[in-house]
Length: 249
Picture 1 (spheres, rainbow, N blue to C red):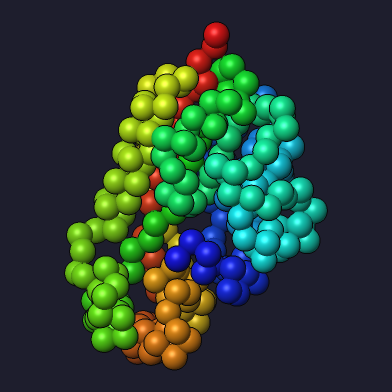
Picture 2 (cartoon, rainbow, N blue to C red; picture 1 turned 90 degrees about the vertical axis):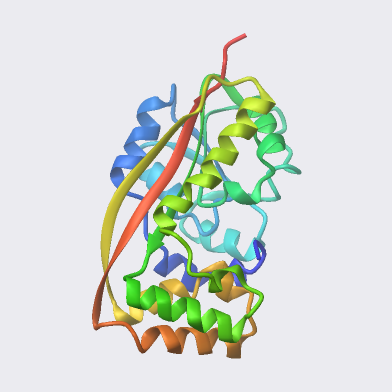
């Protein structure tokens, strides 16, 4: 699934929302400097935000299709998984990862982060999760059950906004096991975004559950969801994240 997001990188870049300014400010305020390593930078959404906030950003991205979109906006991106990436002796003030740290081994990733962060530097993975209105969420789950019976996305789950915390609890456990950092601080930022029906379908189409399906089945899921959406839909978001400071010495 991790390799499926680059199927349509232009759609991904235009439909995935930027991160709240408060999230960018929180991380930059905690960092001792402005040299940023963006792991799993994708098409460069958060990298551009940190660059616009005054940082110097280097991206690492395993999918060359996604990396190419990021480079078009002037970002420097090296193609590799973080675990295999060669830092070549370079170190950074902050390591960020936008909605991608769950694709990195939590212990190996934290261990490598400790190696590339300067003393006092900050490890800061974070990520969006959104929740559709109840009727639309039920229609989406039912469509998944028909088109992809084996997909866990067909379950009527508890609030996705709350469930996403588990990814960052796992990341925090990996940081503790790896060592080299102070106690991770878990945080959450809630917000909302209004979409037209077509724009929301464009967003949902970039989810891993759909990008990994055959095109005809993905279209079936989107059609079922579209039938339940109003012309304008307000979607609730939570941005979960954590910060951990690299110990000195």
